[in-house]
Image 1 (tube, protein in one colour):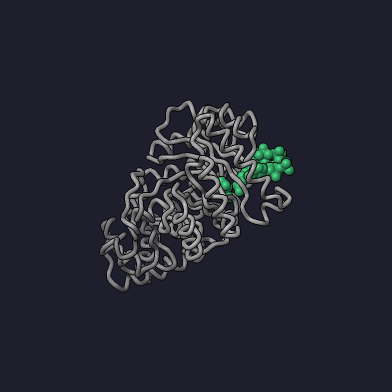
Image 2 (image 1 turned 90 degrees about the horizontal axis):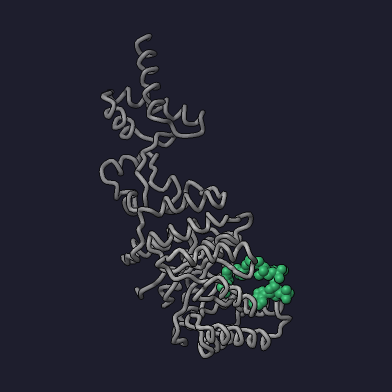
Length: 377
Ligand SMILES: CC(=O)SCCNC(=O)CCNC(=O)[C@H](O)C(C)(C)COP(=O)(O)OP(=O)(O)OC[C@H]1O[C@@H](n2cnc3c(N)ncnc32)[C@H](O)[C@@H]1OP(=O)(O)O
Ligand SMILES: O=C(O)CCC(=O)C(=O)O
């Protein structure tokens, strides 16, 4: 696999999630954390949003982080000037490239949109800035037009081109083909930006990387517009564990990072969310718990500690005898097969009644009750 960099956009596309609004302090804390765990590039926000956002971006630019910082801009001169005022040395300039977007934003006048892009790139380059260009809605754009825009951007001085699946309509196979075409034609690196409208943001990000994208946009917990973006923790762990490439990210801190971003965004992370959901290393089913007790590799793709979790063996409706006797033996209680089965029956009943799992204390109480009722017979 080619070398790939993370350009995390939690502070830009992540914050665009409906209802999410970070404070300056939260933005600074998230930027520091991402930098601290080794994320090499951060898209920190949109200076054109106004003074408050500019203050946050300025504050981040003064932190002295190792990560390269990037501000997002439209192909609008005042946007670029606002980025410069925030102390940005790198700017990203977005331009719509699909017919549907150009019709809505530039009344179909693509020549005007290209002229604006050219003017903005030239201005930014003249100011000594490093410039990246984003093809908004690349996935629905005419492929020849997209290629022309990317080649022009390169000619005008852009140092990277972002392929955006803005409304998340691609699958990994089409993503691969479209990104490959760009990568083959351009001499500047291509970045992949994916959305999760059909639940394929991470898969599409990986397909883009396989096709030669040199950098990938992510957001923590997949936060972002509508159904969100490719999740940082998923992309990093998939690249590490599926492709065997360590990107130098301090993965045991991914869980803590996800909690920081979830709190700042007021989001509830679903328990089954890949990598950082609380169930990702919880085993209840009898067959799974039995396997994990022998060897955790039977039902875990990697060790929980690698992403900050501890393994949990949970008692519930689907549990089996092996887990029950294992837990009881840890408390010095040794039951025969018949007794274990009757405790298991009681665990199942109670779990259905509670509609949740049981704590170890509840298990011990059940054993006590079973013993009394047995003695009373
Ligand atoms: C796919 C993406 O995620 S794109 C990023 C989306 N993020 C955001 O919109 C969040 C931040 N946005 C904002 O704060 C505001 O939209 C601002 C400050 C950028 C602009 O605000 P407003 O002047 O009030 O305009 P409004 O948001 O209503 O409309 C967007 C304007 O930008 C134009 N525009 C949109 N994309 C681009 C672009 N890439 N290049 C140039 N102009 C663009 C639209 O055509 C429209 O222009 P108009 O005012 O001349 O009709
Ligand atoms: O950078 C761009 O061009 C747009 C990025 C974006 O958020 C998108 O297209 O979904």
